[in-house]
Image (cartoon, rainbow, N blue to C red; front, side, top):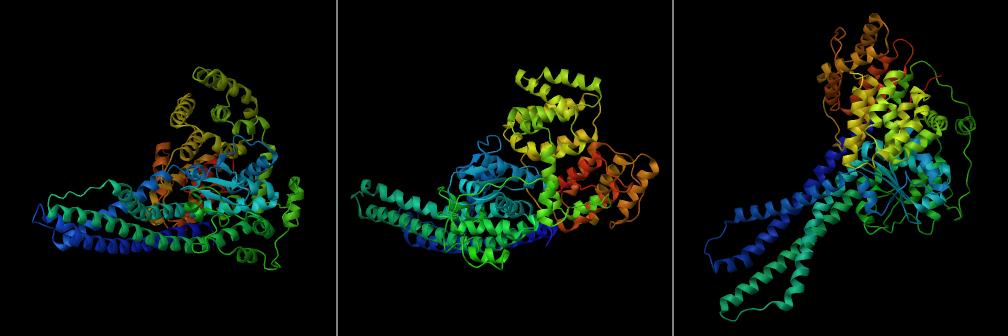
Length: 638
């Protein structure tokens, strides 16, 4: 199953899951409404009759109660959804995680960051923020609504006890969840279950409130009617509390069963994806075996660990009723059929030196990888969501070639702002000097100094490293508050508009930053490609004009791209403005997952028409793929 099939499956499975949980909620609401309506009819109305002879007819009574119950469940689910909409950092911080990207304090933590950065660059994703949970167990998780706001959490035990290749398997497993829509499904599960649980919480609060105030309750003896009414009200409150408490927790019980059954199958898929990513079953199998030998297993000590149990790499709560993970031995045998059933002896990790690129490639594949110059972009499309060993090798090489000054800046909140501004500086010396003068007047002394220190390194930056460097900078950029983001965006806009025109590269960098820093909804489109002919033509026309030097080549590039799509023949559209491209991409975001490969392959044919791919073409193609939520690995060239 490829990336696009995973996306489509996530869309369909999410729909089925919501239908199943909706059925459970409807059943719960029906039973609760009948029970509370009966209580009101037999205990509440006698009291009301003391002051009023009118009462609601049966249908209206039960519908009113049902409306209140539905409102409570929906409000609880929406409240939790709003909480989690801030991104995966909410989950990480709820579990006591510490952000690692900006403060790696030892070699183990730097090794982990190196593994995560390699995986992100290899898969064409922004580097996610990494959080450390101070638990001795071996566990990890990925959380968020989309790859843009995803985070990875990992325990101290995993960092210290797993060797590098085993860490690689765990991180590959989590990237599978990021790429295949599992995080969005997990978030919706958490929100819906919270709505159901809220009924039980309200019932429990009601019962505790009555218990705490029972000693202060005084029943007046002025009349038998008053005594009877007061007793009925108390009995009604107790009955409502019991009904809400019992049915709320019964609903949660069945909701947890649904959550567990969905999660178990997705863990098998993520394990298989990790093997496909690393091409080495021992990576994920070794990590799973060490969970079995670890005295703490995968258990997490955080008070709210059970709430997010379906998000973890291993079973973090140890519940037999609601196991969200398949049995550990079954997972190991799936990836290592020859396993003898014995866990390794628990020992401190042996540090493994990083292999150089050639030795590492030979060790994993048996022979050096030699990418072909033909169909480079098409091969990148085929690797969307499923990067290969060659992409991992390319990512490692990119990190090794980056100037250390740029790498340090990418991991510092102040330095990363100077880095982004520096990427937008013009290559023409006069324009560059004017931009620097304008920017230094707006920046504080420290940030202006950072920009000066990075100028030389940025002048010598390979054009093909701009996007990987921006991906590397995302965790630090995400530490900016709302005001900081507005200032960053305003300064970027001033740099872009300095010469009175907006270049495609400048627009690309701005959109990537905006998309990853500005919260957005995570949706999977359902519009057919056949309905998106006009925005597709606008996009392909832009791509055709980026790399071609003559009108004939531009027309041929567009024709080659258009010819493989389900549209009637048409000539090259007139040159448009960048706002036209923005509008087109907004429409193309609604494209069905299984039809995205057609569009991406058309883009690939367009940029490869002249037999070479320049940096602007590669950046635009990868930026568009990112906007379409298709993480495209690096373009491998000979």
